[in-house]
Image 1 (cartoon, rainbow, N blue to C red):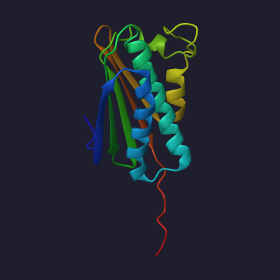
Image 2: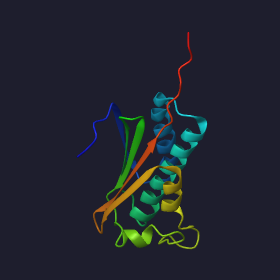
Image 3: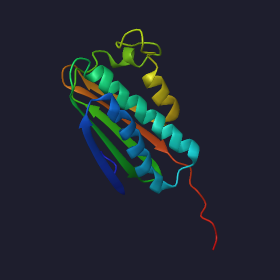
Image 4: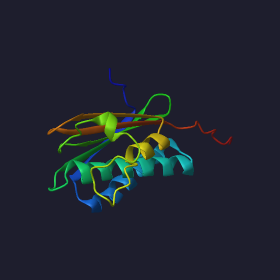
Length: 149
């Protein structure tokens, strides 16, 4: 059952590496309405950057495809971010989530999912080979006290 969102935005863009910084900044700008701390904002930006980079590098290694980022503000001060591609998919999600595992060559660290997990409260990965991958990340932001007038 999907949680009802108070507000949401969906971004769609080609899987070009130049769009990674756009996605990161757009997600952070949207999340800003929740009044996150600077640390929370950096966590969100880092996790989005990793997820979008994975979609670009691993989802479409030899072509340009579509990446969709959905950012939702949910109850209990929770931010939900979904990064989806329609590329080659992941044959073994459990193996792909292991630290240091990569299909991206020597220049890749294999730490993308580990980094996402460390900066977010929840991470779910769904993938179908040949159809794409969806990464759903959730982070509950600390409630901020409003200054008394």
